[in-house]
Image (cartoon, rainbow, N blue to C red):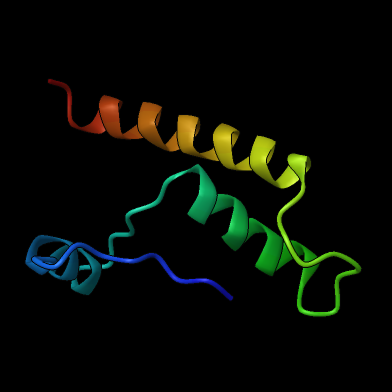
Length: 72
């Protein structure tokens, strides 16, 4: 499994993570989806286009939910 490389000064990201939040982009979200749904015994090592599509959809839904909870 590949991990996200955090910037040198990652205090904010660490505080968010410690509070139960996650920072994700399409690459990390599709990798997580691949790990959960395909598992370690999958016949392929990297996220498929379907994993990427699901990641984009999930992130869009999360962004909409957050915008409704925390309007600008």
